[in-house]
Amino acid sequence: MSMSEIQRDLSAEKIAERPSRIAVVLDYVRRYPLGAAGAMVVLAMLFMAVFADVIAPYDPEENSFEHMFSPPSLQFLLGTDDFGRDIFSRIIFGSRTALFVGFVAASVGATAGLVLGVASAYFGGWFDLVLQRVMDVFMAFPLIIMALAVVAVLGTGIDKVIIAITIPFIPMCARVVRSSALAIREIPYVDAARACGFSHARIILRHMVPNVMAPYLIMITAFVGQAILLEAVLSYLGLGVQEPTAAWGLMLKSGAEEYAESAPWIAIFPGVAISLAVFGFNLFGDALRDALDPKLRMQ
Amino acid sequence: MYRYIIKRLLLTIPTLFGAAVLVFVLMRMVPGDVCEVRMAGFGAFADQEAIDICRENLGLNNPWLWAWPWWDSQFGQVMWGYLTLDLGKSMWTGQPITHEIGLRFQLSLQVAFMATAVAILIAIPLGTISAVKQDTWIDYCVRTFSIAGIAMPSFWLGIMIILGLLITTQAWSGTPWMPPIVYVSPFEDLAGNLSQLIWPAVATGYRYSAVATRMTRSALLEVLREDYVRTARAKGLLERVIINRHALKNAMLPVITIFGIEFAFLIGGLVVTEQVFNLNGLGKLFVESVLTNDFTLTQQLVMLVVVIFVFMNFVVDIFYAWLDPRIRYA
Image (cartoon, rainbow over all chains, first blue to last red; front, side, top):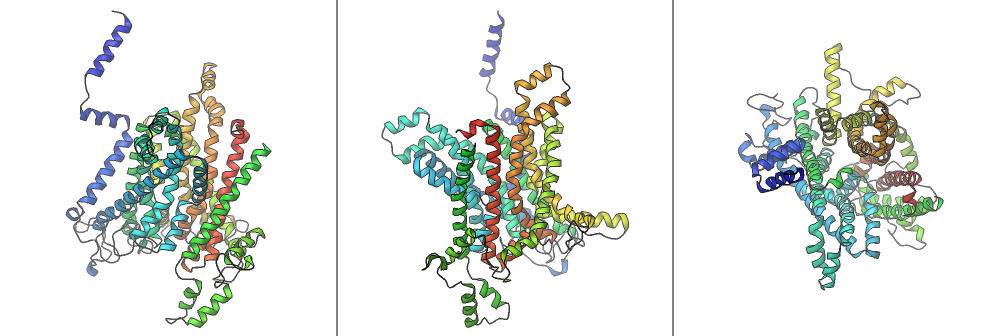
């Protein structure tokens, strides 16, 4: 048996044995340990948000003036704030606000960007040119400034915050998707579809969109983390989610700074929650990007 | 090269014009105006007549987009102002906007430069180590550290820094120490100035370094696979010399771009940091202008950020084209 034959045999064997689901997961963990850690955080957060009613020991919005500024103890795991509300319960319920804002803003923003980006690449010409110039204008604003301007116009509240966060995401996603879609446009099957007489909508939705799913999914995971952070910043500035809703940024606004010295737990724990959540989504998103599309590593 | 510069320069005009229109329209859609905010400050009852006079004086009753002659409209006034480099007056304080900005520009610019310095000091050594020791525990630690920088809200990091200072100085000397609150120019009292501004610079710089660390790492990884690095290794050069002289120099291009672009965003990031550290800079002025509905001021501050951003992008593009002729002719 020659050397090449042995190698062929070995590779054939490899294909023959199908890896089990668990093996796939273990392989993923070994190749992307940071990504696996991120996925754990994301899962834990989802669990927290879904079962918030069961996990949280107290009502997150209930004031209790006998228990103001209680330090962390067995009764109040992470202490209480200046209204006597249990910080642990507020953090648990805050994950709902964060995830809701994060997922809605990220998926709506990325989907709108997906449609615009693919359409821009597909139609080309003046449509592409005008759309790209409009995107240029939007991209010239720092994220936070754009969101602040939108909030100034719309007012505060969770729905307005979502809109304010979604708008700056659209051009960011459109730009990335457009560059991938431009490459796909040149592949003959798009011409073939056009030759078959399919409508523009069908070609875009059935033939081009499925091929830019990788950057789209990557953008969504990256945006969720950013959206959570942005919501926290807006709420901290008093321009986002309003009292008494449990939201992490808001918990840092009300009293956290004033009482930082006497009751540091008010300031510490919500910030840890924000950092951990964004951290988890970023790690997960990075690993997803490496796994799905090595070309995008540079960005 | 000159043709490319001129072409690129002309391309900035539609962006700037579009941004000016967008900001103008957004600001006019804000409910309420500066007169209502000001009159409300005098008492519960706002006198309608006084509000009308105030609006008339500030030119708020002029048509938005179209009047005869055109420069009497609000939009015309703003555009004419840009052409004559006159940014108008703040509707809240009545002072020229250039004066309001000038008062605070030095502080914000200093924090921005210090934050950049902090970011460079963190990003380049860490990114290099991370790339050289790819996929070892050192690499994982550096990556975790840099992703944490993006994940941590800079305002919270600011609160934690202040808290940390209070606790450590309390434990060390018995009296808690806070960074000074009143701004002193670095030319008068350098130590006092630095002891105030180093903390916001660290809080913003850490976040800023995160993107740059990742960029340094990936750029260096790319370069380390190039043939000339293999040649250098084959010549038997020290690994240190290969990294410092051959690889790092070529990996710096995308890193410089990141620093250029992030610098413009830094001004936006200062909005939050200045709030935490109670610094009277441009970011604070911005939040104040939003809260008082002083939209001429908000508009010019946003435009200032946009101009800096567009300018930085322009410089980066020119720099790239200068280094890489393929871009010029594309």
